[in-house]
Length: 261
Length: 259
Image (tube, rainbow over all chains, first blue to last red; front, side, top):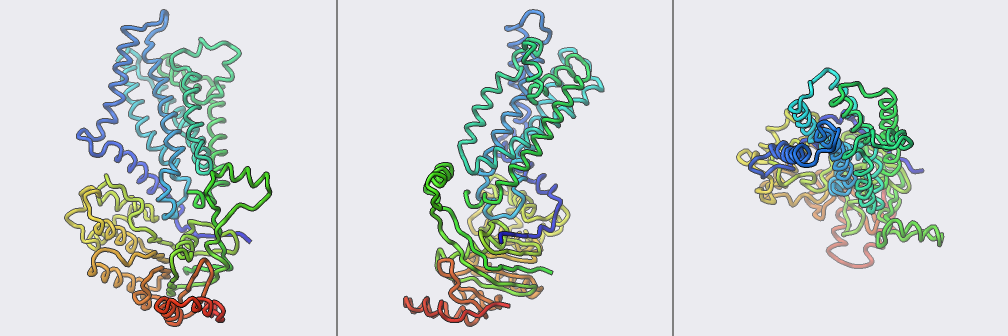
């Protein structure tokens, strides 16, 4: 008979997740004279230079505030891409810890995604600042962003749970993820608008949660409208489905992690 | 009530000379079982509140595997491991420490890793710093610490994390001799409070006061198990004599079963 029962007395892992997230955040800019200001400064510099390029140099005809459109795409995509890639290797990167500390292994990819989400939040703040500077009126509808971006975090958590668990057995997974990100960069409407996509691909695009999140952000910020219901439903379904699937894959694979690390 | 029960526990590791994928493919094609190493073979014991177990044996005997199983870090291939109670595993001091974080920050992360809540961490914070003798350096980054300071911090956090079951792997070499004595005193205090202790060490003499039982392992097999005095003495004799028959003699002897 194979059975293990290790009684975990504590079901509340909030404090541990908080600590792991904060640890990640602190480590990144520790030892820098400007400290965590870099998490503000880095995206700000990028956004300013892109604003310059897309308002003064490259201005597609008939598109208003192209820089806001590009930036909302970039911010959404870069969180997705960075979080997924760093979470995929999170089990390997913390192998020393996993071999010695009994804790739920799920917390590692999840906390890595959440640490990235902290940077994401800062960038969203900057993006909204630029949107206001470009003349868009802040509105209550902007709170829809919280839901939409929350769904993106859920989606990335699901993907990362699956990919990080698979990466323990097949280290090639990290390169698969890297390639997938390169492909997705062009298949998510960052440098083009949703209306440019031919009709027959549009439904497919809506099932790509990242494309859907980009579209929803643009709708909310630039058109000051609530994202279409069909989009919200698809986004929610795909994100929660992915999370459930991710947990299932992780659960199946985690029992032999220690043997392969 | 806390307890640690092993019932006929075996653990094998797959050889990792090939990547998992190719091993898997080869196994499918040839139908052969993959090469494996048996780290632990049919080990049984049971510990209840207030009992201590010493695990002795040469390198590669399976001592660390036994601790990892008890900590829930590994799952057995065969048999059953049953653990109830809060386990604090001191397998390698300072695992989970980050060099760029300060001592205080590392203390908090580590306490959370051991399962403490924010309130519990705040409650023990000062005691830990006091015990580790790091009052003046607790806000310095860990990379400026000496090896001994890091070990002291790790040990201090673990013993203050209210363990019900304490697993210790060869950590008696912590810090200087004075601090070693402090550690031993702390362990003995925990033992008096009725905590379960499983420890692995090459130095049986230090362990004897804390352990009621002992298991002598050799290549995953139990050579002898029973009351600590007997087993540790037999092991000591074997180590000193270095005679090849001793292990065999021990193996054939009717090993006393633990309660």
